Length: 497
Image (cartoon, rainbow, N blue to C red; front, side):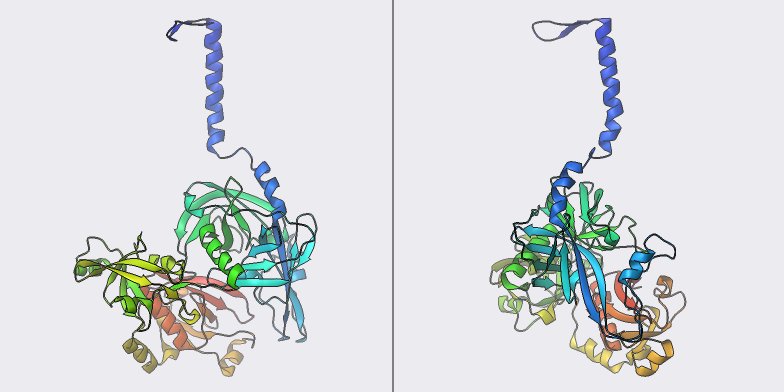
């Protein structure tokens, strides 16, 4: 029995009480590791959210080419072999046919607004939304889509209000925070997986506005467009990509942060398109050598390489060789920070910009314009100066050994030589230098470069310009989308040196 003085100090403890305290302490110690492993269960959170997460099935009519449609393949004899055969049948006899694909999405408005990835619905003739209770609704309208952030906003007409979920603040997420994904991997609708935030502000060279959340929550094919939740049941990301040599989850998945998604989706809802801010500059990274020459203590900011003559920056007096240190109060740590800050700024807003010029800081006000779609990458790449463009034109790009590659236009003769179908478009690789960066990534002659850093290429010159821009931007890898002769697509990240 415990005895206390009037001041509350323990005066004496009976033997029975000592045993009780010892048992309680042991129970606490035994329970501590289980608590450290994370939440005991996410069942209550998941149960409340599953009805708002949907499966998205699309059909697309392909013209008869005699070729196999791009798509994943199940291992022979695996439980999923029949599933893959159902959805990715061989094209026989060159007859037009419908090809189906699957993805995920989620309801953000009870009236019938659904979010998914752009790549899930791109090119679809018909889009069907499948709910967890078995209800199916046909998408009546694509309200808008944005390839740059891989987001799309769809509209259905429900008979009764739908269960909707809310966005949270992705900037509050820290590395190590628990997250939960719900989606439709390999057609297995309503699948729940749990993991943590592995990294924030991740740049995977997928586009000029990379700012992904990275997670080890299992994300597979079919999870694209589905939500990534925090433990309060708020959407803090839209699952969009994985890194995997096998096509399955290896614990490296990426989600568009909710703070980015909300801005894009608000514009798609209001305008049916994105309206991004425009500064009107080409910038490049400040290297250690440049920082030293400019008198900067650290390599920080974005070096202005070129100013668009009719752009907002030119009107405000920004000049080539200026270093942008702050934009609207946000510190620009590197070149990649600037386009992310600019595109999310309201068009027409007067923004304070802090520059370093001739060793002194200069403050200017820039009235943000609207980014023309054909200049969507301009703030992310280094300057494409006229002398360099003319030099590229004078070269013979068919024999340009960039990344250890020799490339050529995809002519009928080369299609015949490598057995490439007419559904495949791009620039063909005719030779790969042994032990080159590309060779080490298993790039082979006969592969066709379809995209470089998510930009379509149709001529060798296009490839040369994109690769040179990536090199000048200081990025260590370039993301290539390659096609084989049958049209099977794969992404390959190749070191630039």
